[in-house]
Image (cartoon, rainbow, N blue to C red; front, side, top):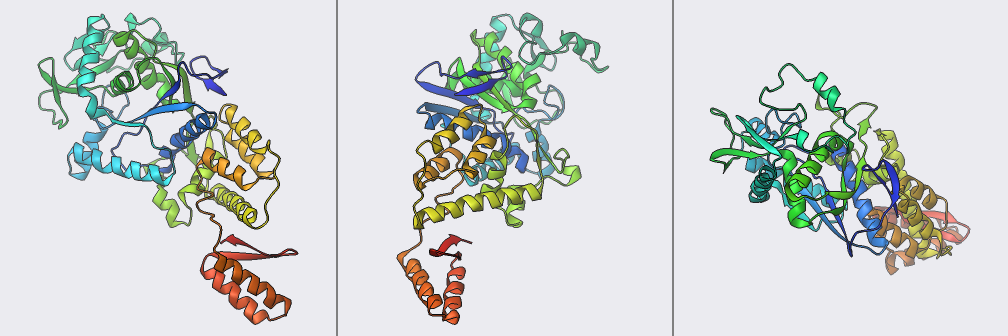
Length: 446
């Protein structure tokens, strides 16, 4: 199996360090309804886990839910996204987090993503966060200001390496409002103090003052507790590279003296009609919006897997329609397997898996599936790999249906077209369509 490693900027052969592949996935900040773009990364990382399992690996995967500390700037200023969501909806941040975490996890199931072994909410790891800050401070990597405890990036010479950051350029371009208490423009808060008069509902006492952890800290502490260091694969979006993942790496080394992950996988964004997903543009479609237009979550997952995780994907409803048709075509082929068993080359599914083994190239795998003969057993393996509910949505029909199809064939042969049409219409009401072939009528789900 080969994967593109952001750490080295090249495709490398992957082997786990131990008996189990340890994976961490940066999860959502649960403060609002997720749009379809929010599920793209999880479709690709679901494919990663499924592929590893089909290759015979044991996998332990942790997914976090950020329910505190993620500021609107993604850095160290602005309002906490949970606090902002609570203020807008007139609820507490904890109520906001509980509600949107449930929405996210319900849709996670709709997308047929394999459940993570551990779903870790940031607020459940506050003691571990404090312990990590203590360790970083003890090891000489932090300093305290009026508004928090900051990581001194000058103490970690490798800070810029992962994201290939131009720290000198950052210094030259530092904004006028750059805090005079920060030693370096790249320094970041590992713990924030709540200022006098600041209405912040989510707070914990640390160093004798109320505060809350920095957003980046949760991932480092969750990984340390649930998976240990170093893990095998850390996944996320390309937007995580310059700040979030860079800071996680620094925190992990400063607190625990270890490298965080051997492999780093990052997916690109999707756009909609060539534009960034934005509320102001009115293109923040949800899964429910797609369903109201006649598309299932599986159609959307099919669209995602029809491309490559590292590519910029442009979503249109025309392309979603094409993905829906492709999935329908695959299901028709499955239906045909029940009626007229397909003789498949034993190596056909192996070719599909080989494509995905090559840096999760699901686009190539889909093209192979489109153009080769596949048995019912092959389709079961494809469903195991892609999680598209192909088999469960295409069960074999009952003996009663087969009897009706036979009766219709007899009626057609005797030119009793009225009876033939009546049976056809009766089957259509059950969602079963017929296609007349030289071998007789073949059924498929309409």
